[in-house]
Image (spheres, rainbow, N blue to C red):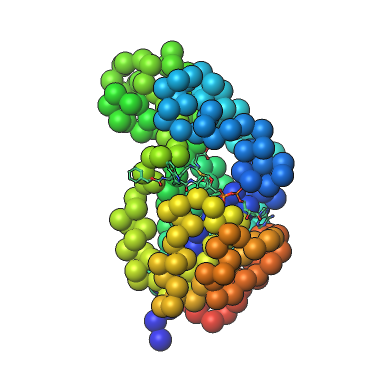
Length: 237
Ligand code: BV8
């Protein structure tokens, strides 16, 4: 029998054990800064320097060689390599730990911290250094328009059609390390409920836990390798 289509959704919890803060845990990012001040288009229009400083600090942390993918990222990369059917890892995270772990069939629905976009010409390119309004776009030469290539609140997430197609065809959906607070990502499980096996991997029940058939409670570095081993034992090559 053909392996079912597999869609995995990850959130900040999968990167927690690599040393990156989550958003809504007590020590999380939103305990230190307000969304309205740093993660909306209005905030960027009002005070671009403040928004750039917020993302420059997170980009600098991601450049730290001590910050590495963890066992959960690595297990998902192995699952991607060995899954014989359709596979898509949709991450809400803007860090680059999934690609550094080796995952190929990956989609960043909220953008990427190590990329910048020009608001004048829309060119997106790898950008690992600080950004500011003084930076001129290497493509069109105009300054003042470079922004982090991330999706802010009130902006449309990326590649929603591709995500929709993957959800339509999936037989197994797992959400890992996400609080189920932010839409449309938090609504994906409801889209597939009833026709896909749905599993939530978290250290605590998310806000949409009741939409899932199954839960695996514990840190991602323990639960994800366990889920990957189980799925590959049943369906692997
Ligand atoms: C949209 C990128 C529509 C940037 C992010 C009013 C006005 C405008 C919009 C809205 C509104 N009301 C509602 C909305 C919709 C809004 C929304 O949902 N708001 C919330 C606050 C209610 N959504 C949007 O705006 C989205 N866009 O709706 O567009 C549209 C339609 C037409 C035209 C235009 C637009 C866009 C939202 C994207 C925002 N960008 N990130 C950046 O990183 O700075 S959001 C950010 O928070 C993440 O990307 C993620 O999506 C979200 C939630 O974060 P999580 O990843 O879940 O992390 P969190 O800290 O919350 O939870 C961590 C979890 O890990 C916990 O469950 C914890 O238990 C677990 N955990 C911790 N440690 C571990 C662990 N698990 C396992 N192991 C561990 N060790």
